[in-house]
Image (tube, rainbow, N blue to C red; front, side, top):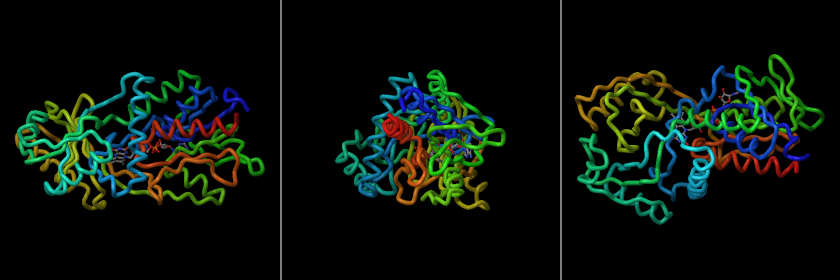
Length: 346
Ligand SMILES: Cc1cc2nc3c(=O)[nH]c(=O)nc-3n(C[C@H](O)[C@H](O)[C@H](O)COP(=O)(O)OP(=O)(O)OC[C@H]3O[C@@H](n4cnc5c(N)ncnc54)[C@H](O)[C@@H]3O)c2cc1C
């Protein structure tokens, strides 16, 4: 079947569905994106920190994942060239770990892996980030790291997909997958059966639920994390900060954004207060600052830590695209998924 007559239904309008839809549409597929929420990118993508980089991680901790993420970062340049300016909120990251020894070990590994990064002393840290009044003695400066607003990126990709003819339907939950024998023939929603040659499950944890009805068990699980947004006037930061006890970046045009591990439901409010205290300690006690929102959200993770991106065996035409960290990986995984799907039906 030629690419331009292939009808692909993409389930989910988060960053992975958006990237998959855009890559497919611009390669000539007929694409329909179905999203159960009334708005776009309101799932995990709408509560994501949006760090596009690897500067805080030891490459040796998981070399395969690190090299995949490095490959994915290179795709962002291509995305920017094709889509136009991306919703970047901060460029460059300052990173420091619990001890100088650990920080320098991270530097050595990152440099050996080819990452552009250098050590900077307190004076230089102050020039890079004047608001950081409690700067460490030593930090790492990674100029190529950046953070963007993931929901805006997803919207940008979906708008570009629509410009290539993709159809976008919100408020439309896929309730089941429709089969003809061992072949996918569409999806069932509350209103209708929508026919398709290929169905892409880009609906994060929901992919596991839809495929479970076909007796398939996907190796995905939920791992909660917390996104915190703060009002701050004026926006005091220029770059990403990754310190001993806080991960912080400016929001695009307003406020500050932080992410944290899930501390348990009963300790969520205390987490908000602890973050406020830590920001005031690091930046300035007099900073005009308040907690705007705090969301605990389940990240879709895979058991082996690598993307689950492939045709599912046993049902022809059923494809899955679920991964973490999905913002970093979205441009790469969207392209690879599109190439594999269109290649299979050429
Ligand atoms: C606090 C936090 C911080 C993070 N920080 C980073 C980071 O710095 N860098 C990074 O790369 N990643 C980060 N992540 C992870 C990243 O946000 C996710 O990997 C990514 O957003 C997942 O995108 P997705 O499109 O797979 O899922 P989603 O954004 O959840 O999209 C799936 C969509 O499918 C829809 N859906 C579900 N079921 C159905 C159905 N049956 N029918 C129709 N629609 C359906 C949902 O409504 C949703 O909109 C973070 C996550 C969290 C929570």
